[in-house]
Amino acid sequence: MSKPPSLARASAPASIGNVGVGFDVLGLAFDAVRDTVTARREDAPGIQLGHVSGLVESLPSEVEGNCALAAADAVLQAAGAPCGLTIDIHKGVPLSAGMGGSAASAVAAAGAVNALLGSPFSLSELLPLAMEGERVSADPPPWDNVMAALMGGLVVAGRIDPPLIRRLPLPAGVACILFHPDRKVETQRARELLAPTIDKNIAVEHARNMASFVAGCAINDLDLVRAGLRDVFIEPQRRPLLPELEPVQAAALAAGALGCSFSGSGPSVFAWALASDLPAVERAMAEAFRAAKCDANAYDAPIDSAGLRVESVE
Image: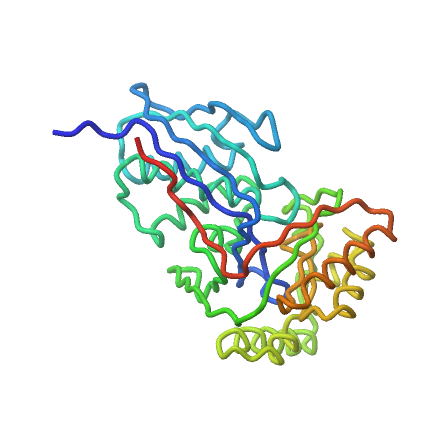
């Protein structure tokens, strides 16, 4: 009988929650940076935090306060495995940046533990377990970043209970740029800004935009993508979180972007553009941030980015 593996390592990408128009419904994997989690088998029961590296040097050591540990625990409990775990975390995705940092840690941890245990769960079965990691960041946990980091590409939540999650087609020749300004926005705080009701006219326009965007992606119609990639629902309520958004957005659109909006709850800002227009869009957004005296780092990645990846099992 072969000895079970003692170590498994997995990584998950950053992600763009909402993709502008799809609040809590759409998510886009953004493989510019990744979190990597290593799960080590221990004889003693329980889960402990091991080495933390990358963009941070320390993270909460309690399961209920750490996205990766909570996701790892959910997988371990669901599998009924008798072993314990030590979890090492390498943070490549910035926290409180609107880049799905908590989701990347949760998905990478769920994937590493699943691999360590012999992969008892499929990707779709891992989703609710990774969501228990995201719950640490916001409760109830939003689906957008987690499903995108897990599955890759552009993902839609067609139904929550029971989950119906699908990857969508992506238009040809389109690229994505993201700027992370020197700000931090906590997901829970950003959600608390949102009004409990919405005006009927805004609801109709939002539905029109989302339908146009999804249809445009599905049939490769960039006119529909451009028409739909506008957030009239959530973005206006969150603009106070980043006063620089309006000039950056205007600069991106003037340079040829198909659309530009907050990534998730912000403060990061993303734009879609034809690959041929992307350099001009990037320069315009960078100049707008400079003019606003706001430092911002640029990232780019294919819009058809990979999701969860098992790096090694030993």
